Length: 213
Image 1 (spheres, helix red, strand yellow):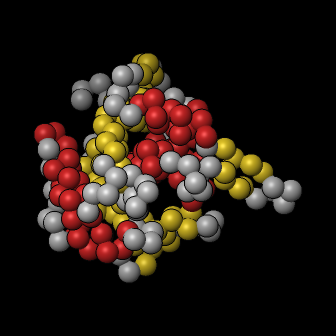
Image 2 (cartoon, rainbow, N blue to C red):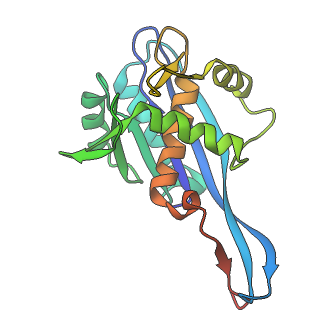
Image 3 (cartoon, rainbow, N blue to C red):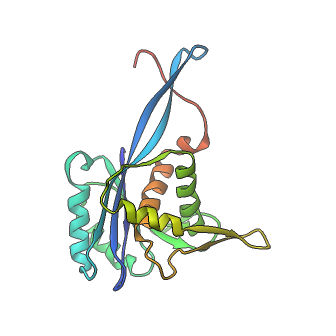
């Protein structure tokens, strides 16, 4: 899969938000020992959309189906959706919508390890946040200038903070606590999906293009 779409489901005072991230393989320098071109993967934020406040969930599902079924994304994407709280009934609607991409519902937890049960991924909150931070710090996530909601996304990212408690436990401020963070969350879900699909991108192992490819 080349595209990963994150869907953050809003409630009465929060936006439902879609973010589409594309995974692109980049050719690096020539490795004479391996007799191949080095390569690395980069994530590019291609699309952001805030669905208007108060939009009924069936309309959110219909809009998600249109986005994931459009153009080059259709048949080449994965949808990562927040299934926490009100997300579960919407997941049922998404499953019935015959999307043109696999659906991965994720329940966000306060734990420390990921798990899978009854069709749902259980993902610690800090995995989403730190994964997004690492992608930004390493330059693995590129955000196009002039993108709709790009400035709002940058503002949300500026609000994201990591605090270390006296016991060494990570505590995350400005995340699901009063401020709008729907854009960050949707992008974080998409990036998490890309990391799960391509774990070698994160592991740091060298990848190569052989010269005859």
